[in-house]
Image (tube, rainbow over all chains, first blue to last red; front, side, top):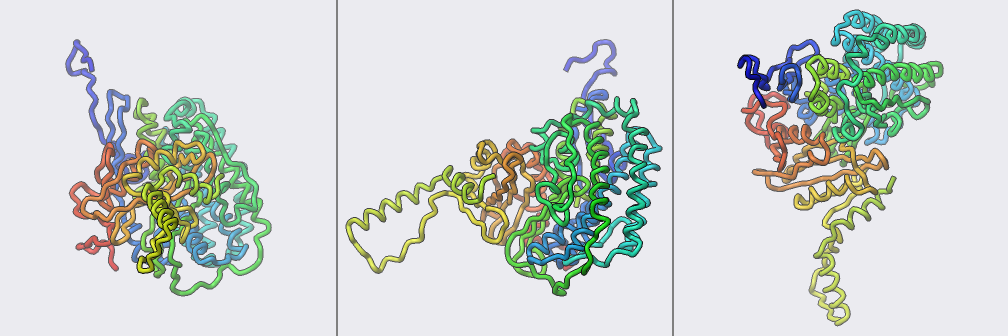
Amino acid sequence: MESTPINSSFKTEPYQINMGPQHPATHGVLNLLLTIDGEIIKKVEPDLGYIHRSIEKMCERDSYQQIVHLTDRMDYLSSNINNEAVCLAVENALQLEIPERVKVIRTIIGELTRISSHCLWWGVMGMDVGALTTYFYGFRDREMLNDIFEETCGARLTMNYNVPGGLMLDIHPNFVKRVKKFVTHFKTKIPEYDRLLTENVIFQKRTKGVGILSKEDAISFGVSGPVARASGVSCDVRKYHPYSALDKVTFKECLKTEGDTFARYQVRIMELWESLSIVEQLIDDIPEGEHRVTTNAVIKLPKGEFYQKVETARGELGVYIISTGTKNPYRLKFRSPGFSNLSALNHMAVGGKIGDLVATMATLDLVIPDIDR
Amino acid sequence: MMTNEALQHLIGGWFPNPEADSVSDVKQHAETDEVLDENREPSKPINPSLLEFTEEGSQFLNITVQPEQFYALMAKLKTNEETHFDYLFCLSGVDWGEELGVVYHLESTVHRHTIVVKVKTEDRENPNFDSVYNIWATAEFHEREVFDFFGIKFNNHPNLKRLFLTENWEGFPLRKDYVDEINMVIK
């Protein structure tokens, strides 16, 4: 590299800085080791492990009912969908017939969880690029959902509503009424989101053409969820491997082809509408029946290997269980969406500026415990 | 989308087992000479492919491959137009007790079929396999995770070091023989 002859103190030599672990845009504890040349990013090296809790190791000693309580501590913004993944894996392995009522309620709560997660993401996305108002608006709407969750199962964030065999409790008598109230309310709020942020010129300038990920690269990096769909990869687990009541509803897979930060933003906004539509299709006729089938107090899975994938708010969550026929798994691996999505960050950020990295990272929607496990 | 049977037929043909041919030649020869040795034990049928296929105990077609053929198989699984496994969606290290190994879950975004590839070694001291990071970019992070927890090394990996644990951590926590002296995970 050529050095500037005028003043040696202005030599442009690449140097390294730490971003995080407590940087407000790293949403938890993620340390990024940046190699920068001036303001241009040359390399991003994520340093993980600050909150690694060895969940996979703990699963090897726990019973299947206990494992469910660990999963919502991973991606705590999609806790209900994470629980569902383990429950479905266990139920499929045992070939348990799950009541229709359970399937429908699981799907409704799952989509509400997705909306709640996207609301928080939207608020934080705005905040990361310097618009603080979005944070309060996102939380305002999410609060209504948290209240519904609290009334349903007693928890607002780390819900343990799903259990192998069904649901912990039946829905609260107010559930249907409150969900409908939320749907009506939220339909007037998404256009507000659009007016506030989507159509904002400064926001568009900060996000369009930034952090581009091509379709081929997205597949190669194993990226999933809204991040992959913004690059034109059709990968919605709800479409290709439908679970619970998702085969009974019609919804559109939200796809964009630009692969930039703005496209990832748009995909999530589009998903808010689709999730609302799924909830609307199911909420009026939740089938009558049991909310749980009885399982053995100690669940033993047959010998073999089981894989279950679900679509969380961040993408494809896989649960890979190797069972030797005992009451706990021999090996349990969580294929978490955030881990694969993060692996593409270096590729997306190189050549951009630090401010662009913050915007790109915001649209990856990282939840650190989901990466660290 | 190809059926498991069609996949097995196609992929099995890529790696023919030379031993299987020579044995069947010998057998044919023996039959024509009509030499019947009753004391001889019935020979185990030799797999015509170097790969082992099974669907038992899994919802997918499983392939077990020897470390020598591993990289060639993986490259072909991705580039062959009929298989086109371009999406490596799960990469997990496993300690089977005697053997250490890695399990790869592959899906095709074009044909939508799924396959599981397993590679194993009995060498617990110095286990190593070829890295597939230049076939699927996601493997770079996943292989580091497997190295971190199982101590399995990957040849040609560009940055093989601990991912979650600190550099000076001793042992590999997800191995079954790992001694957890500070009782971080209490049984």
